[in-house]
Image (cartoon, rainbow, N blue to C red):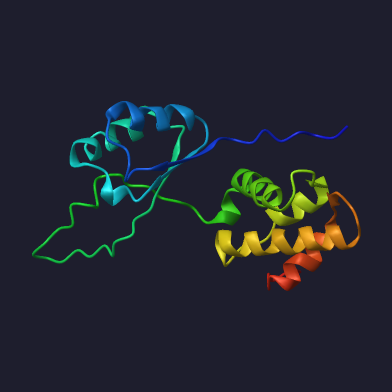
Length: 173
C-alpha cells in the first residue's frame, strides 16, 4: 500500500500590503500546522509588527519565515527596530526530515503535478547532510525530476535521486 504524506500548509503573506490586524491573523490561521512566510516583514506597519510576537506565541504550531529587502544592521549606538523579538532557532535541514518531505513534494510539483516519489527515494533524500540546505535540495529534486522524465516515468525512483544528487553536487555516499 502506498503511504500518503500529508502536506502541511505553506502560506506566503506579502506584509507590504497588509494593512489590518485581521489580515495578519488570517495568515496565521491559514498556516496552522505549517509554515507562514512573512515576505517583506520590514514593510509591515509598526502597529501590526507589535502583534507578531503575540501571534507567534499563540500559534506555536506555525513555523515562521520572515524575509526583508533591506540590509539589517545593528550597531552599539543604534539598535535596528526591524529586529523585533521574534526569536526563531531553525535547526539544519538534515535534522528536520518532515520538512524535507514537504519541500520535496513542493519542488516536485513545481515541475509536474503528476509526479510522485518512491518511498526509498524519499528516505534517501531524508538521510543526506544537505550542506547547501534548501537550495541544494531543490536542485537535487529538479535533477531527479529530469531523470524520471528521461525514463518516461511519473515516479521518481532511488536511481533518479542518486543521479539528481550527483548533478546537484550532493555528497551522495
